[in-house]
Each structure stands twice: as C-alpha cells, then as structure tokens.
Image 1 (spheres, helix red, strand yellow):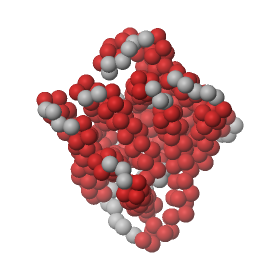
Image 2 (image 1 turned 90 degrees about the vertical axis):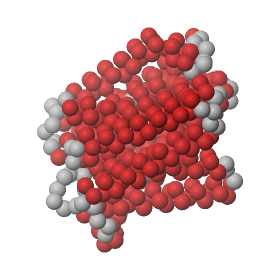
Image 3 (image 1 turned 60 degrees about the vertical axis):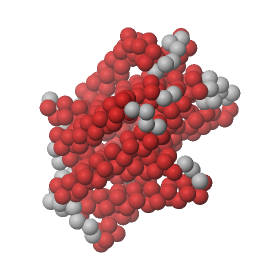
Length: 391
C-alpha cells in the first residue's frame, strides 16, 4: 500500500503544479495568459514524448539483472536524443524569430521535466518508489513558493511562466546526477552501438504512438477559434489529465512487475482504472459549477457538456492504459504505434471532412478518436495470447 501512496503522491504533485499555476494565471492576469500557458504545457508534452524517443517504456520493461549494458545504453540514448531534439527546437525558434522568453521557457521545461521523468523511471524500475516521489514533491514545493510570490507581486505573466519552467530545469539537473549515480551508470560508445538498432526500432514505435495521441489533442485545441471555447476545452483537458493520472502512474509499477514475473495477476487494475474514471465524472458533476467559477467561465449547459464529453474520452483513455501496460511489458511496441496512428488519422480525417465550429464539435471528434483507439487495442489483445496474463 505504501508503494501505491508513494507513486500517487509523487506524481500527483507533478500534475497539480501546472494546474495550480494555471489557476493563478487566470486569476491574476487573464484567460489569454492561462490558455497560452496550457498550450505551452501541451506543446512541451509533445516535444518531451518526441525528445525521450520512447526510452522510458523500454527502461521500465527491461528486467533487473546483473548485465547493465542495455539499461546504460538506454540512458545514454535517452539523453543524446533529448539534447538533439532541444537543439533542433532552438534552431527553429531562432530562424522563426519566436519570442525569446517563450522559447527559453519551453526549453527549460522540456529538459527539466524529461530529466525528472528519467530519475523517476530509474527509481521505479528498482522499486524505489519513494525516491521518485521525493523528486516531484521537492519540485512542487519550489513551485508553490513561486505561486505565492506571483500572488503577492505584480510580476509579468511571461516572466512568471519562465521562472516556473526554470524551477523544473534546475530540479531536473540535480536529480539526473543522483539517478545516474544510483543506477551505476557509465557511458560506453561500444555498448550504445551494439544496442542501437533494437533501441531505435522500439523507440520509433513508442514515439509514433505518443506523438500521435498528444498531437491529436493539441491539433483539436489549436483549431478552436473562439477564446472562451478554447478556455473551456483547456479546462476539460486539465481535468482529463487528472482522471488518467492514476492509470498512468501505476504503469511505473505494473510494467516492471509483469516484465520480471509473468505470473503476476493484473486484471484488478482494469477495474481500478474504470472506478477512478467514474469517480472523476461524479466529482465533476458535483463540483463543476465551482470549477467554472474559479476559472472565470460561464457554467452553461453547453460548457458543462463540452467538459463531460472530454471526460468520456478520459474514461476510454484510462481503460486503454491497462492494455498498453500489458503490451509494454511484453515489448510489443508496434501495437502501440498502430493504435496511435489510427487515432490520429481519425481525428485528422474528421477535422478535414466535417465542418467543426465550437468546442463541443472538437470534443466529440476527440471522443470518436478514442473509441477507435481503444477498439484496436481490444482487437490486438484478444486476438493474441495476451489475455492469458489475466487468468
């Protein structure tokens, strides 16, 4: 039970940080500042999933053994891919003349969060859940101090966002060094080249999957022209993130367990994920009006229904996470690749052929995308021998 609490509490603090900071932005500045911050976080998530090149899933699925050559290769390629991706982003920002503070904030957050995620992944692989939780909690404490500072001062919104991202960057550096020491990491060109083909092949599958899912949501939000509708969709997305929180967090526990012991029973997690999703919808039904008031949005039937449809997508996403965890533990990353591409294609096709106008239209497109996404995972699961893991 303590392991569950460590995982949940640590990850919860990392999820709460952007939400609390977004709340301060919308209360102290404007809806535009809040929407801009959410877009920054969403774009950062896309870049993080591209930058880490699908390495986290492979680190979790790698068995704990005396031979550390593959895990060290994964760590090395993880950081090399991150540096390469950030360099490309910096070059693009320079050529396009994008605002310096915006670009710097994005780079700080992408690098910092990626390194925090790496430290947490390495800790969970060794069943040291408390270590990963501490990293997120310490980062949250510093962000909390920033929130108090922003609330009490008249600092500009873009400066406060940059400081928020800088906190993640500094925290990431500190815990990266600690994580490398704990894992007995050493850099070896020979080992990297030996494992490069397998790592890159699996990584391409994972990164296509992650990029397709995240970009589907980002694409829909970018298409919404009415600022109020965009803010409602952004609120729905943040609640979506909370609802899928526990299923995603428990991946760090479920995947290593299955990788090292195929006899572990995991079917109970599917029930847990479904219950958590229903609880999230129930809580929104009770507290929805308060949330709309806090974010200065009208609690109309239309706005409530938009968020409700997004939460239905979150429910499907939570259930899908269970099957994703099983495929991860079996290193069947190609199944994830196809599921992500199916969702992206559905969202893109509907975005082109249907005349989408308000936030509700885009929320419904997202829901349809997740229906096809889950359907493919179910087909792959029951069409193989994976279901035998649940006996």
